[in-house]
Image 1 (tube, rainbow, N blue to C red):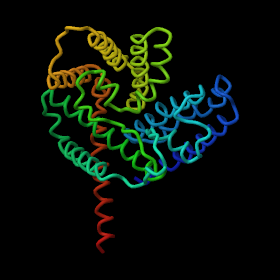
Image 2: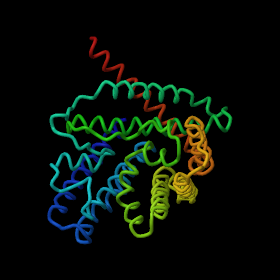
Image 3: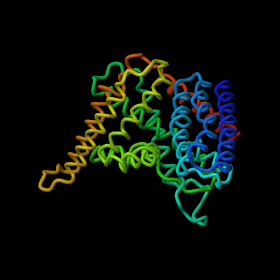
Length: 337
């Protein structure tokens, strides 16, 4: 635990310094190739920082925050697009760049550092669900195939929700600003378009939409924009999986996203056709989640389960929950002593 905290402090300091430089460089250079060249040192440093962490979870989450989300934000900054801007105050610039957050456009009178009760209740419920899921780790090996798929899907969802909600809570306390939601109940998605575009891990479409979809759509049309977006998402997921397995990508994860991209294009076409039968929302939701889970088991989770690292990740989560329980118990003793 001490070594992980030291690594976290080191990476945090390096990121803060890199983002301070990025803000300074962007304020001195106009958007375009010159600004991209000025930001290139930061873009080259970010992929190295996650290797500071030895635990798989910290390494992968930091890669997602820094290499993917922060990297794309810096590329948009190089082109003169938000959400980053050199006119932002330094603390806000660094926080918005390094964390998976997007500020809501609200007046200062509505800003607050307090976490709303509904956020705290939702966070507590998801933390309890995650702890209960981790306690079933040994049962997972005896589950049928569909049970393992459900277990792994719930594990990824709750883990991402908790990590990103923790980052959002820290950012809100630091900035006193309202933030865009990071997830919107993906288990209620009634189509793949709804799942990927409006409910699941919304920071990713928020980064890919202005950087990939809109430029490609403007030149080649909406279907090409969708396919290009899913292709880039697949390639970035391959990179994220490298931080987990330290093995070159097999293409399965990219194939997963290209398949879903093609299905989204087909959905868009069907939605424009009049007279086509539409299933009830409950049936559409069940079919969407079944398709996501089935194709994820076939293609998305394959590189990790084949390497056996899925068990190591679950074991790390179990250790993390035990450490948090000890911290909570220690804090309670201090409060009540």
